[in-house]
Length: 183
Image (cartoon, rainbow, N blue to C red; front, side):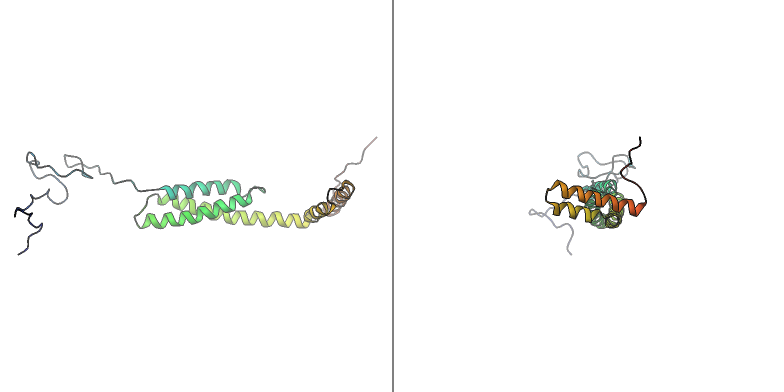
């Protein structure tokens, strides 16, 4: 009959370790026969147990990028930054959540937060981008920019582009952009 653990090279069997459950035997351990160091509960039947910390870097990164995405997607100049940060936050948040659920990483709450903020940033950034483009097209701003580009630095042509653009805005919104001087 095979015994576990097997004997060493001298035919000696190793001493038995602590009883199952890592609790000291009744009356404590005999002198010189202590449990091996490591993740052991404290003496006295301890109620406190600390697990090894799990890496949370990906979850933290997802959450930070999600926050940056939320702060920047609604600004006209930084919409692209918001969308890119949101996209990265969503991808990293999903990966971190999958790792946390499989037990390979920690921070599932931060991963979910990064994922949600990332998705909101991407959707919000796309909506803001479409709205800005629509306003530019409706107000003739794209035509004005094209006119200025074609003017090639000629100030008379640039002034003409500006006058046409102002007239278009006045006609579209029924406002006067250049006040009439009063005397």
